[in-house]
Structures are given as structure tokens and as C-alpha cells.
Length: 337
Ligand SMILES: NC(=O)c1ccc[n+]([C@@H]2O[C@H](COP(=O)([O-])OP(=O)(O)OC[C@H]3O[C@@H](n4cnc5c(N)ncnc54)[C@H](O)[C@@H]3O)[C@@H](O)[C@H]2O)c1
View 1 (cartoon, rainbow, N blue to C red):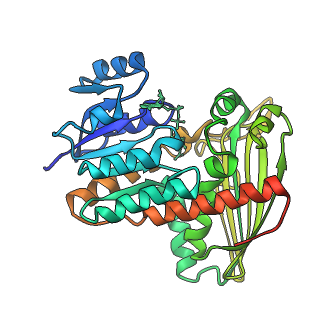
View 2: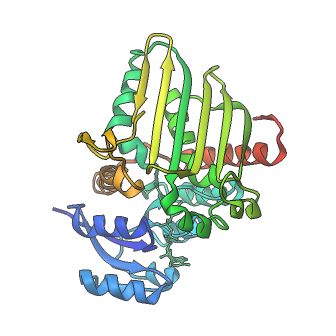
């Protein structure tokens, strides 16, 4: 079996998981290099997994001639320059979302992808690789819910993760770009359309720290899509019960709901608190399988010389929409696209 030699940058909350998956769960991949500017974290991981090469400098890592592909899970504002450098070094690239924190950054990645049509580029919109979302999309495509009327998406991080969210918010690009970008991608992908107008509101209901970055701890957007569908999104950081990602698509002939009551598993607990289900506590738990599936797809595209469904242009489009949501939130104006 041909194994693709991969390097991974970023060993943070999600990067560590991607690296772990590459090392142990992706049969056609061989993780040969890791990069993180945190020397201690890097050494620990390289030693624990016997990874041959460790770097604190991304530019040094991509000079390694054994490498064939790079997985980027660095902070969002670094993505597009690292994408361009890796592609120019002849490496296939998987990058985490968002593509960039603004459209100008995204254009750097687009141009690099266009310079290298021979290489695979994929963006990490992992929800598309979650079986429930893929199943629901097929139903919409087959006309099973008639004409879509409304898409409603909630993405709420648990209050228990608030310290990380506050620490990260200065360079995340804001709630729309960092969080709602997943729902924006889902809405465009499932409805096969994009917004013609956007209005957004929100605020700092529990954590004024977000206001220092002209952001809120809970924000929402209402959009009118070009195919007349209504789209409503909520991105929040204060869910008391856990990680709450729920989606509803109402059509003229039926409604689809994905995780309308978010749950850890099928267990129901009957005890002194009543009858209840537990909830996933973070993205790593809820989308555990999707993070593996998306990288399996990336590696399979390299092995079989084909291109993934998620493109660099999806990245630019979602960043642009998220950026316009942020603009609507900041100005309180209706934005026409
Ligand atoms: N798809 C998803 O569901 C999802 C979930 C979480 C995060 N993300 C994305 O993944 C990316 C990383 O997020 P995170 O939560 O893991 O961040 P994090 O802050 O936990 O980790 C970032 C890591 O990158 C390292 N780093 C920073 N600058 C570096 C540099 N110049 N060179 C090498 N290493 C560097 C840091 O030391 C840290 O270990 C972000 O773009 C985020 O949007 C996606």
C-alpha cells in the first residue's frame, strides 16, 4: 500500500487530534514530521510517537524532501501564507478552516492553488463528512423535503471552554469567521445557493472580554439567499450544557433536524435529576469520526489523483460571507451582497 508522507503544523486543541489521527488512524498516511513553535509540546509528541522529524519553524519543515503533504492546524491568520508556501514547495495541502480571516488572505491561497493544479488542496469543513449531515444533504438533493424554506443553524461552545475562547478571540477573526463559518458552509452546501442580503446582531451577554475585539459572546445573522431561502445562524460561547451544534432545514414537504437535542450517545439516564441524555462536551467529541473521514478523503485524493469536493473557492466564499456578517454586526446595517 502506498503511504503518503505527511507533516503537520500546529499541536493545539485540534492540531494534536489531526496529528494523532494521521499517526494512528489513516492507513495510507505516514506522519513523518511535526511542527509547533512550542518546543516542549513538540518534543513531547515527537518522542511519544517516534516521529522522525520535529520543527519549531514551518519554513524549515517544508524543506524536508521526504515530505509529500502537509496538514495545517495553526492559528487562522497563518493559514494562507503556509498554504502558499507548502504548495510552492510541491506539497499537497490540507488546511483547517477558515481559509483566511479576510478575503485578501484567501486570495493568496486561491492564487497558490491555481499555480499548482497538479497538487491536491482541501479545506477542513469536517461537518460535510459527518454521516448525518451527508445523509440530510442527499435527502434535500433528492427533493424529499420539497423546496427548502428555512435553514437554521446553532453552533454553541460550552461555557466550560470559555477561558480558551477568550484567550483565542484576539486572533480568531471573530465569532462569525471562527465559528459560524461552519454553518455558513453547510447552508451554502445544502441549499446550493448563497446570500443576497445579511443582517446580524448580538452582544456580550456574559463575557465583556469579547467586546474588546468588537465581538460578542453570542451573535446571530439572518440572511436571504439568492434562491429565496431564509437562513438563520447563532454562534455562541455560553452553552451551560455542553457543545451544541444543531441544524434544521424546513422544506415545503418536510423538515430535517440534525441533533436538535444534542446528545453524547443513545443512553438515557433516569435518576434524581429526572430523565435526561448527556451531551458531547466539545468539537473533538461530537465530530470525532468526521475529523478522521475528512483526512482519509484528503489522502485518498492524493493516492488516486483526484480532487476533493471542498475547494479553495468554498473557503473564500465562506470567509467573505462571514466577514460581511461581522460588518453587519458591527454597523447594525443591512448588507447587500
Ligand atoms: N474544524 C473545526 O471544528 C475546528 C475546531 C477547532 C479549531 N479549528 C481551527 O484549527 C486552527 C487551530 O485551532 P486550535 O484551536 O487547535 O488552536 P490552538 O491555539 O489550540 O493551537 C495552535 C497551535 O499552533 C501553534 N503555533 C502558533 N503559531 C505557530 C507557528 N508560527 N508555527 C508553528 N506552530 C505555531 C501553537 O503553539 C499551538 O500549539 C484554527 O484555524 C481553528 O479555526 C477548527
